[in-house]
Image (tube, rainbow, N blue to C red; front, side, top):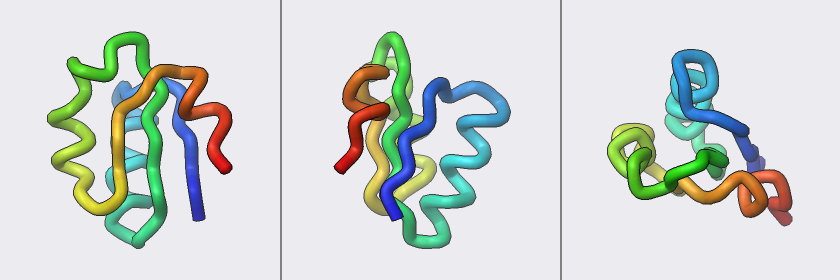
Length: 59
């Protein structure tokens, strides 16, 4: 499943990591995607930090 999460704080970040480990495609919509690369790497799988618009328009 493709999941877009707006924000990468305590709740969004942890949910994204858990869902990514279950095999879902995760996009974290954040203000500064470069600052959240570590979170995307920690989540592994098909995960990326993008701008909010890209995360909210998953297809």
